[in-house]
Image (cartoon, rainbow, N blue to C red; front, top):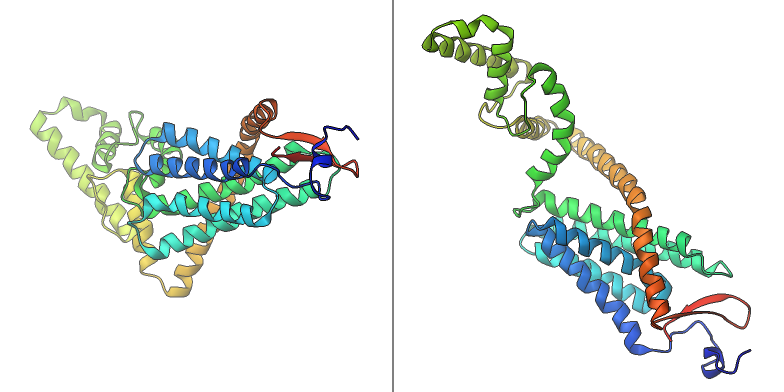
Length: 317
């Protein structure tokens, strides 16, 4: 064994960090990045929120390699969960608690899965360990932000989330009936365009008569929609807003078991969507995490070496 080996200078247990300040830096910096990401998200600054979220998730993956003691790892995950919730302190405690559990479980699951992978190999399998941590961390962050955003009055609000999800689905359908349709168009505007399209001779009528015919057509279409759906249509709101309102009213009239079942199905769909998104974004995040890992190795923040049983370990030297 080389004379300058860190193992010869330390205790019998090799896989232990030697630098206290580096351990605390590994704890504190990701916590600050998590707080910054949450703060910018709730204030509608998606650019900086996204940058800090990428930084946080990348550093979260590196914590799996750098933090040896379970106490430090548990403390870090707890702090990261808390700071992600702090900017949303004004919302209902029940939703904060649900979000906290979702974030905590996903972060802990990702970190523990990565640690198990790391401990069961002789060489450091960076991509496999980091991807497990990133998938768990991204799932927790996306799920927590989705829940918090759904009940928040900030720029990242429930209506904006629903609009983001529904508009790509609604727009192609509506463009078939109304080629000039845009997501911000009101229901009245859509019905007016459809009426003009179905009655091309309307432009030949006097303006007053044409307006009356269009209004009558819109009112008739609105009455038909109300009869079919059983709820009042807000002609001055967008289609996505009416769909959201329709869902809320329909669910509210159902019995508790059915209502719980519907929300359970919605949550499972949300969970499946988020898990799929987390799996996809873990690949570009893996690149960022690997670059940071190599930089920290290059500047001497950590080292990779073989312990006495020829098992490769990462140490904060």
